[in-house]
Length: 130
Image 1 (tube, rainbow, N blue to C red):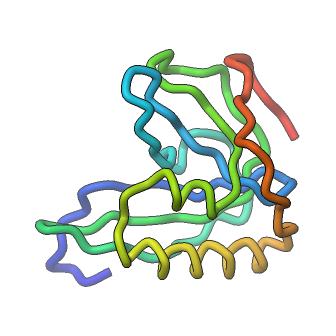
Image 2: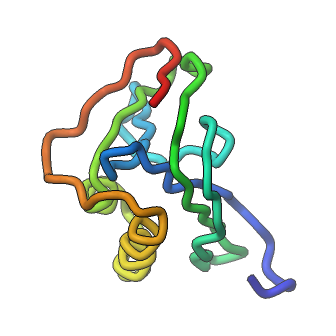
């Protein structure tokens, strides 16, 4: 990332073993958010890139998710969804297509399967291990 840019946000594409990714949904508004990279225990973390915003950049990391701690913020629900579903629920404009392509490449590098499209699955508030 160019040094002149301010980092406004750092989020992760955290992959479950079946190739789906962790997604946070605000219970009050239904807004979808990628989690911070520290949202769970991960393996194989690597920079995915950045997306420019008006005054900075959103950093992205990709990693294999191996465990989740108990839900820390009850304002959000944790779901597993395909990368395409995350893209559909997020408002990233044309940059979202490039990010989706990078996510597919990262999933392949992590040797994870391409998940079948199923309804997003809510995870329990308790700890989860894979």
